Image 1: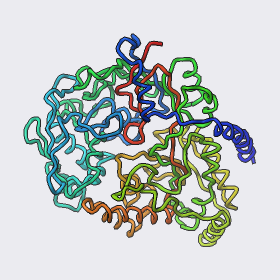
Image 2: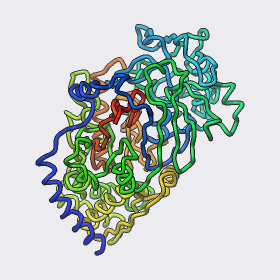
Image 3: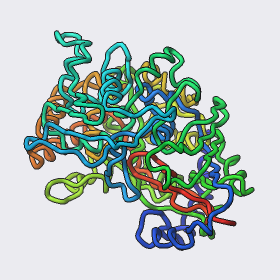
Image 4: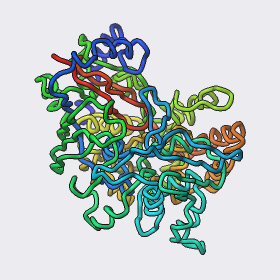
Length: 565
């Protein structure tokens, strides 16, 4: 009863606020042409502040800054800034050369990519970045002994022999020298794929494909990437200080090939888990940029510093662990899937411009060969009325021989997570008789570990894409994939995913297969997608060229600058 009373008060207050906000809001998100023109105005050298320092916050520390052991957004966001790959994303999100001198030569059959490195690319210690650095890094990632969390991405990329090197039943198991990458000379690199892969260049912007200096990594041994002194950098910035759990500081990497275009000298982060604390720090003038949760948007409703409304490519969802007796029942999963009022969630609680989601591949993320959005065919999947959901619930309870069920909901330890979890719990308990939901708050890294070990019932989570293709959301749920973590296994689904990966040269057929696979996944109610996230942040007007992306680094400040103020 306490939960329900608290939530009713919260929703009542929020409904008034959202009515007002909807009447006066406008899309102030970055990325439009008008914003870019405004950003460029008054940003010459004479207008720059003397101290080019940006102050930001994070809600959690990194899990790892080893590019082969990072698996979360904070870690990847850092790697995007301190390391560089063959290609990168420009301000418009287009793929452009980074360490590479130019875009690659590609064979007629689409399976061989040849890159030439720039002449002046070096590590932060002055050593040249070579083709062999990429070869060593890729061999290290795909090596089963490395136990790289993202080694599966090499299989997704269809890199020659990657699957066999990872397959214990293969004669090639562990033979990393067979991976399809070759240093032709110090500056020239040849990559061979097993089949055409339309999203391959997108993948190369991702940290698991970045180079490593073999001599340095081996010298560091088990200490590699544990502290700034145990790392080399080839990106726009270097990690200068890292006070674990408290904060960190980046400094400009003067040895980066494009350092002349980097204006910032330092970027300072503080770890602040409580959003109200972060908001107060921002309002005091000690922060330059801050992502907002729904509870705080109204505080800035009349401010030009507020930016809201542009959909990101992040899908928020609830994982359902099928090791739990009740969640192994498809009728019960269907009932849970259909018992949450998603529109109420985004309108009343989230309030960022997010959209209700009964899908796992985001809107406005990928277009098919016909030019239509992936979402066009199935805008909403597995939609039941509340009455139908209750009937499914009762049928499921009967099948497992229960009248009452208790299910835990694991969440991260932030205020926003807690508020939304209360909403989920209230909706489920109110709409599904006999269900009790127990909320289990966990620190971020503990949450990751418990999920990885499948020690949870339900888990609130989100997924940001690794590259711009629907398969990055869909192959997660194939049997034995490392981020599946639900126990789900459907041979028909697995076959469709495998088929989609073999049709790089047949885009129309591939698209239809992926749409069919998504429909099966959500009709099986493997996860409960709730909403597609949207941006909501405040930024000081004197800070220019901070890019909030829907793929790649969530916040890119590589070419940001601070004006006099």
